Amino acid sequence: MSATLAPATMDRTDVRNILTGGTKIGLATAVAVVLYLWASKHLPAGGARVGVEALLVLVAGTAVTFLPGRWCASRSVEGIAGAAGMGLWGGIVFTVVDIVFLRPFKAYPWTWDAIGGGSTWWYLPIWWMFGTFLAWMGGTLVARAPEGASLARTAAPVLIGAVVIAVVARLAGIDATLPVTAGAGFAVTLPVLAVVALARRA
Image (tube, rainbow, N blue to C red; front, side):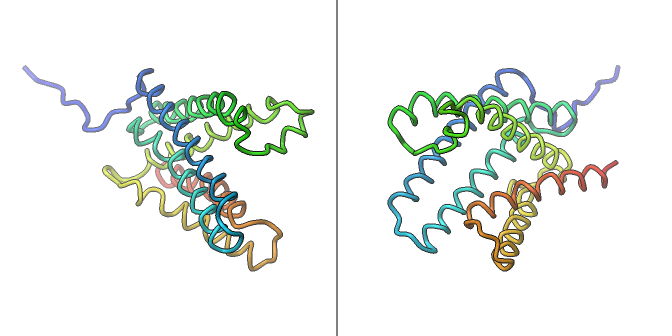
């Protein structure tokens, strides 16, 4: 009589795990937004404030991108899809926090509303898609990382790419703040590294 050994790591894509993890992601995003708003309003203008804002962008981006894949123990297509679903649910949870708490208390002036004629609904689907995309790419990198790789090891290349792009943008004289260029660098580096990881493991 023989026994079949289960793999040491299995994708965790049950509905409860995805909803629980997505809720944590959404609440963490809300906390990061509140901290960013506090820094922008209360820290004196200058390098310190810009540095804190950029740090918050990168920390929040790292969490939203890589934690879903780790919580889903992504090792295959199913785990990557689970991470993407967790990112989507996180975006929806943040939307609820935004509408119910942040807006009624006028936490920030959301000038984007003017583009949609005062409506928030033009950009909310973009937020959901972006959250899903980040978690999808992050889940891919988690799945392709060596077994047992730490969060720092998996995220480091993306963060380095974000910093490099932000520095290049600054040296090139691009008229954008450091949080914007760092966030854009993160978003650009992430899919490039995901594609490279898939190509190397193909």
